[in-house]
Length: 213
Image (tube, rainbow, N blue to C red; front, side):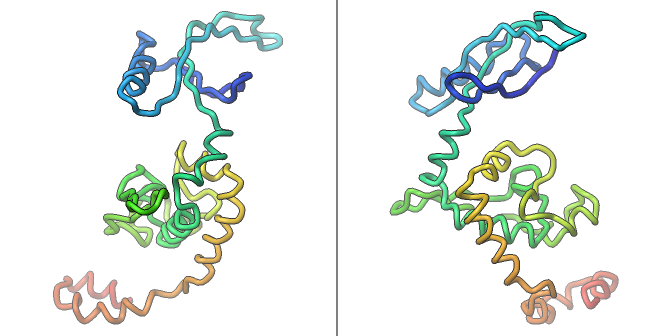
């Protein structure tokens, strides 16, 4: 049976997995290799899973599963030590305004992480914006038009789901990002008028007509 879920234990929240790895050793050995190399990585253990569902199962044995440490409390308490939360809120706000689903809101690509030598905080830098302004058809046009700053990503995004549960980010920082959205004019930016003379001669007739509109 394929399963990936989380469970609460005395030591916090853990990820329980039994999926494509028939040996049940891939994650356990990979995380150990990272730790042996001095790279912080989750700890692992094995769990024998019994399931009780009233009227269906009474401690039915579902098999052996690998269990991976996933401590949300520690993540929430310390994430501000490593990420520029106000900057990340503004980054997310502009990305929602651009309806850019070809980046962290979609496949999780098209960005750089920058760590300045004099700062302990990682900053997010956008990249590859040729499909911004809602032009990446990962979702319907209506969904792209109505992206919410409170849950803008598509499908599952473990990093953003955890980030948006962090109180210091989802409250004060997210409100700051919302204020950025409110300051942005919904009309096309004035830079469009400035750029038009430079690009119009190189556009096809059909594209130029759409651009003019």
